[in-house]
Amino acid sequence: MTDETQSQLASRLAVEAIEREMASWNEPRPKPPRRRPRQNRNDSISYSIRLYPEEVEMIEARAEKLGVRPTGLARNLIRSGLASGGLDEVTDTLDRLEQVVAELRSLVG
Image (tube, rainbow, N blue to C red; front, side, top):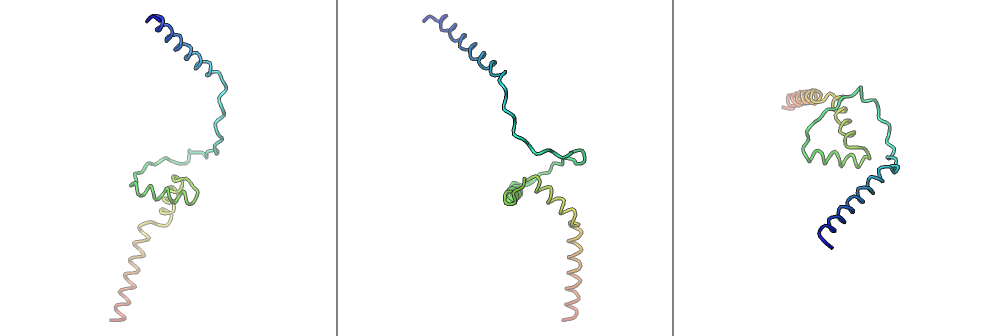
């Protein structure tokens, strides 16, 4: 085979490969898997946060154990933290404990 014949053969093979690919473009595509309907996102805002890898691992492990998505678990953890009063509630509880301890010390000693 001459160099020109080899070149022509390579070109013909390349054209045939392109034609086969183009023919597959007209084939019906499989339907994508059904997804759960999404809720209206107009009433929520996407908020990006940074977490340490260990925190992400903890969230993912707990989410897997509960059978939920990690993002849903993280969102619910944030919501429950906000609903419980967060740091203010902890500070108030510590203040009350300190008062009780001071009263007990005054009674004992």
